[in-house]
Image 1: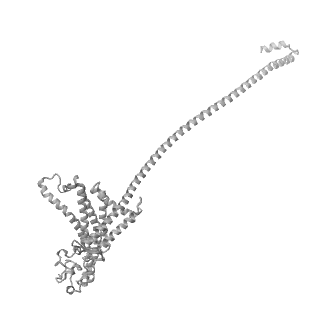
Image 2: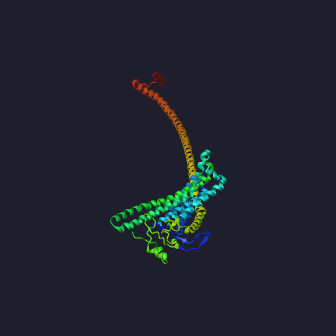
Image 3: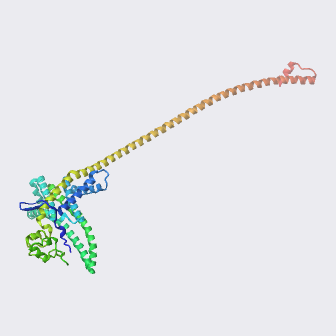
Length: 253
Length: 222
């Protein structure tokens, strides 16, 4: 049976410079992961370039789609972050479209960039660094008020503040692992059932029955994975908005 | 289940460790995702090309997942940051303003059109009101004109009738005068005829002509 983990293996497509920076191995080769990201971003940029090039008051089909995606994130930033949400719209929109397009490229090609820990970790780190930067720039040291809920007695704060701090520290970890885990698990399961089809049908008899059942299962799983591809991008964007809202509106709750 | 050795394992079969590796092929099962063959004899360099083969002897953190091999992390992160930065700039500087612009333009155009339509409707209503007023005015003017015309024609008719009446009365009067004259003349002839008849009768009865005075006295008695 084919190895269901083979799909996650990084392979070099075009060799690039390889060097060491402070003991860290940096391989700038064009790998299948990088290629998947380039295809995803390239297609998304192409889509937006085509649909907004001659943007008119009465939109065409493509423009309706582009405006729909834009409006989705615009409403989200506006409703979660509030009046200042518009400033963060480009970042959240870019993040959402990047994850969504990478997930969808993973559904149509064999490689899913968002199933790489390095990728999801970087996305989560960017978000958390942005949250920290916004928090300190807007509030200075008032940023730490975030961990001290107002109107709580001191003896509860002794317990509560460490919990809040740990929760904050865990945010990038959960952001990383949620997306990574969903993409990893979904694609492994799909490949496992795909393997069952071939193995089952070659066995014949009861195996053929299992093969047929796997066939229908994989159709259902594929539709589910399309939902997950969208949902995880959406969840990542929503959480980014929530975390930004926490630091933008520190004094307001 | 037939074992599928990783192609890379065969590629690395030129050294002694690779040979031992291909001689005892690593079998991975789907259920466990953990290689059955621990490949303890695997050389240190082999793990870079055969991540799916268990190398926990060298790196416990790598497990079975290719993603956890940190060799490709730095490259991926650098590429991701560059791609993401370009994507972000395009989104922030080109596409977001474009979409924001077209959505705002649409909103203002719709508002403007609505305002125009409302103004047009108000204007039309004002014009309709004005037209109704003009119609009413024209109605009263026409009614007045008709009344005047009627009065004038009545007066004319009355005047004409009066003139005709007068003319007719005058002719009537003349006719009456003439008739009276003729009757008087006729009545005058009546006495002449009477005296003549009486004289003839007297002459026939008496054989003697009566005198004019006697006749006159006799007729005067009648």
